[in-house]
Amino acid sequence: MTIEENVSLKRFNTFGIEAKAQRYADIQTLDDLKSILKLEASKPIFILGGGSNMLLTKDIDALVLHLNLKGISVVEESNNHIILEANAGENWHDFVLYCIEKGYGGVENMSLIPGNIGTAPIQNIGAYGVEFKDVFESCKVIDIKTQSETTFYKDQCNFGYRESIFKQALKGKCIITSVRLKLTKNHHNLSLDYGAIRNQLLEVNITNPTIKDVSDAVIAIRKSKLPDPKDIGNSGSFFKNPVITKSQFKKLQNNFPNAPHYVVSDSEIKVPAGWLIETAGFKGKRFGNYGVHNKQALVLVNYGNALGKDIYNLALLIQQTIYRLFSINIETEVNII
Image (cartoon, rainbow, N blue to C red):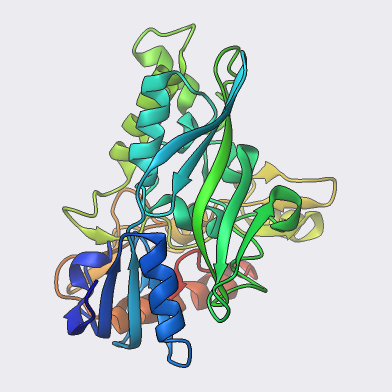
């Protein structure tokens, strides 16, 4: 393991933003991680995973540890379920495809979500009615200061909508090194009622779908709406869907009777942030080298050589405009660095 200096991070973030790491190390084993944390205990450290959920607005004046721990193993297996442990550097979508090939259900709705396994619990990733916490069993973490290892179970993780203890109280204090997920081997509980999954399946004449059929449908839907970071720099959904009170939603309905929404509880309503942004006139709007994607208003894009600060300022403009027009705050899903 070597530590490099003044390393470009452009190829390591899906936005394709040019930023430099003061120092950089590629971490491929747990022993390497422990050793470098001990060696660099008194110095600033930045943990880099798949680079899919961040916007770099500046150079990183720290040691960037690029977590590339690989491996998938079976922990426990019964007739109906299997528990897999995947190391933090495994690509999430590749893991989903691995599960589908093996016939393991529970993650098919989360196909094509960018990023790595190690960052999935932090964000509590989710799509089309399914969240990461639904299949999560536990994860192993290492304390950055002490290098001690701990296991966190579901009830300790404070999972919420794109939230967890790792994004809040433990942010910057520990590193997730592996994750355990409990998946079904048969009698899969398919989630088909969110978004356009059923319609997509009917378009290809599938009425009794398998987990692969659901995955294929999700992939087709996402590809039709979301740009591939290999083609256009982006980080997927930039904003969270806001959850507002019923009284707030009634005010919104007075001006927009057909506003789409999802009931969260007896007192809360979720409103699609993409609809708010599109209604505010931002969908497809371009500002030179950056802008809002023309098929999905939730996605901010780098058309080439944009600065992270430019995209961040666009995000601020969108947030301010949404509040001015709808009196609704929308939060970023992407981490601003």
